[in-house]
Image: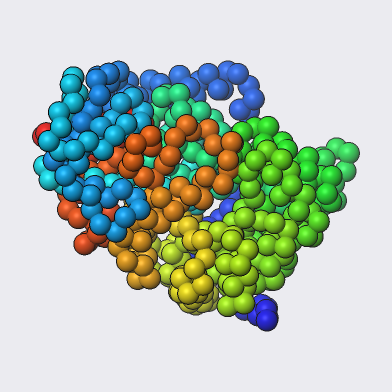
Amino acid sequence: MQPSLGEKYQHLAHGFGCLCHTPAFARINARITEGLSRRSVLKGIVAGLAAGTLGAGGALAADDTRPRLLTNTRIFDGRSAQLIEGRNVLVEGRTITALVPRAERVADALEIDCGGRVIMPGMIDAHWHSILAAVPEMVAMTADVPYIHLLAAQEAERTLMRGFTTIRDVGGPSFSLKRAIDEGVTPGPRIFPSGAMISQTSGHGDFRMRNEVPRDAMRSMSTAEMAGISAIADGVPEVLRRVREQLLLGATQIKIMVGGGVSSQFDPIDSTQFTVAEIRAAVDAAADWGTYVCSHVYTPKGIQRALDGGVRCIEHGQLADEDTVKLMADAGAWWSLQPFLADEDSNPHASEAQRAQQRLIAEGTVRAFELGQKYDVNMAWGTDILFSPGKTGTQGKQLAKIVRWFSPADVLRLGTSRNADLLGLCGLRNPYPAALGVIEAGAMADLLVIDGNPLEDINLIADPERNLKLIMKDGRVHKDTLTS
């Protein structure tokens, strides 16, 4: 049975203020990506990023090439609810090569004494916006394009310094930032980019104003489409084309819009978007490249249509009813949830009506986590922060707060190995060579040394500046206060 969604939802903010469906978002992204095809702009951005990292305290300096042996530590491996005792972690190059018995010596290894602290995998945020998470809306609307990318690079480094070594980007022009991070131009988490959001006409990714409708020969693509933030597609052939374009650009997964957003101009939250045939076309195009489709959607009807079309991951879905959650579980689909709880970490709203609607979504969030647990849905976690420099620092806190529904061990699993399992759905489109979110032989050397035991006090991850004593990504140490 599907709920009747009507006028009372009309100001409900996507993700408590997530603005990715607003005209302002489209205009900002148009500014960000405007002119990126010009080689001079790209060269200027890269040169600026490179210059900015030269004085970064040696974080990007050539590392000692000897193997590293992290000693005197207890290990949360990303999976077990018990700490592994009596083992050291051996890192060679970018990967973990072994968990070595504590008494065993490793010739020529550089030893890092962890002082009996816990070591855990780097954390993963499965719903992040790399370019616009920390840019104030007015700055994004008025600043020069290279400046916005420099801010995004700075935020990428801060993201890494919070212990998040990997993110899944579900909307925004992050391809260039991903390349800069992968090439060592600037520090940051590795990025799994979705590229432009695929939307029907009048859908959640159609950012056109009324005076831009209908299309004509003089303006066949909207500003947002030209910018690469969205791609409007109607009918199976257009959906196939737009999905394939994102795969050409390097998308590791595809995002489509199967439902509305109430604060949007023209697509109410109760609308259901794309036909099953169109959704299936996106899914088939992605599957031909060995990857998957995730979808923005809130309502039971929209979730059911997405599942009917073969979508593998539902983003948000806070209005799901029990029957729909059962369908997700039966389909083996993933549910990427965010802790939208109308609390101090939510985006502020001026009117009481909006705050009341935040509380409504918070109620839905509580039900969603409870139902997901009840029916053993494949669950993932993310934050979905936009235009909020003051909120990005809550990333670890927003993971820790879901201890309301999960044990500390399960919270850590969600933020490490479980999110990594979701990322792994992209198959051969995965640009990274080894396992993520775990501490085991052959995995990427993404390691955090934490002052305390997060299995006993999950809130330790909410204060990374104080509690993370060492941060390693790809075998490179970006923070080390163990010896200071």
